Length: 474
Ligand code: NAD
Image (cartoon, rainbow, N blue to C red; front, side):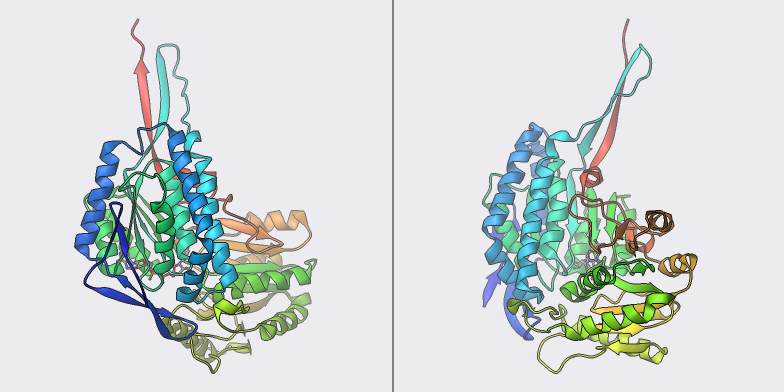
């Protein structure tokens, strides 16, 4: 079995203690990784602090950082095949999706390479006796905690803008699927990026993650993961009022109006809820359909769900396993609870009879107040519901504590914009789920979190504003 290491101060480090990584497609051990402890975390923080103090990231001309980020992007492209295979084996996702994830990771570095030398402040007019301007300065050390659903691309999403802005970074990878991130760091380690600028630790969240969050040297926290962990981290961050970005969960709804292109809707449902086995924070987990077209859409969605192929990621099946036995059991329990609450299973609803952590493509007809229609499942489970009026559709869509993304399917520009203006959340997809990209700002409201990733806007999550106000001497 392959054994993976942590990356601290420019060196690959082992530990006596190891974690076992499982292959979700086969339920067999796939690799081991050094389990970082608090001493490793302290060493990573010391390396990052040394790097920040030296000014090697923040004092150089920004074009230097552009150069490093472009080197990283090129190195990631070079290791895409190696990384994708490991990502597919440890995460269960399809090889094609794992490959796309590495390419997306490279794109984040290319995109923010282009921003490193454009983080410009403003001049503030205060009359002839004053000169006033702002600067955007890095925080120092950014601690970044990554979940297991898209480790390489979520890691790159936060790492690239943080480095572009001149921060050093300590990354905590997820215990369940950390190996592909070590491949990403192998690419980074092959570039001229200064020593200590990035460090990677795989350790228990409640031990190493919590230690990093509370660490005296931590200047910023970027957390992507579940709501309970985010809330815990915010409590710890409050001790030092550490600035934080929180990318949490979702229960996102798509609204289908009468004039929608139904084929386009079905394609979007397939990508929206069955891609990555539904383990996507911005998954389309609820489909609200106008009463007049409800039966037609329902039957097309059920046919599509029943037609999906299930199998190992390496063979690129439509539906791949969940990441762990625990997640599989959690999803199955939520389906059982939905049945007990009176919801109707229209497709799937069980685990197929095979090894691995699979759950069938599931479609559930429910009412808006049921737990299955309000709580995040994080699995291949779509809830479908009819609505009568536009206002009712908006009320159902907003009837959760989350507010990440939403979708509108229909031809009328006026109706689309009228509805988009009333949906709670950070992003609205129109006529195509996941219509955005790395260029479009992403983040939530309510329990989905705060702060923005992606797009030009994200760079401002990684800097703080300093104002210089000068009184001119006569
Ligand atoms: P999780 O909260 O269990 O773990 C996320 C990370 O936090 C892991 O690396 C874990 O080790 C670490 N962690 C756990 N306890 C910690 C603590 N006390 N202090 C510091 N770190 C700690 O989440 P998960 O199960 O890995 O991911 C699934 C969740 O993430 C879902 O709710 C999903 O919606 C959300 N998610 C959100 C986004 C987004 O961008 N909004 C993206 C992906 C996933």
